[in-house]
Length: 206
Image: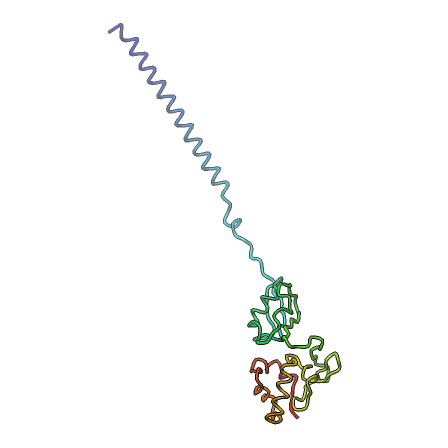
């Protein structure tokens, strides 16, 4: 027994040393874990910092008219293209000149975006109401135009009426007589309600 006692004492001391080392190692790991967790929490932004600020989009107004199905003032985001305005206006009307307007062009606030018809003379300026209420084109033509007496050139001065439609109107007059009211122009082939809505302010019968 006396011979083995020193051996047992050494074993016990070794076990105690290992236990102490393991305990210290565990404490170190726990401390590292605690520090890492605290660091992660500190790096998480507060709720207010995660909230995106709401950016209000600026809107502009563009007047779409001419060979479109739904002419009128359209409200679009700033930076929009002519193609988007055309879409809001219902697309091209029948007989529209689909390549005249650059659909990739950016529109501006207060712009008047006119889509012509394919047979329309674009050298004719559209009628603009003067202070007296009578429309005048840049060429001096007055509005409204009497569709019962106007010749081809005079009819072509009306926005939306080109040479083809002007000849059709005259042919109708020759075959069926004078128009009794302006709405009768819709009896002419190729002129429906949508087209008449664009012509109404520029024509009359006398």
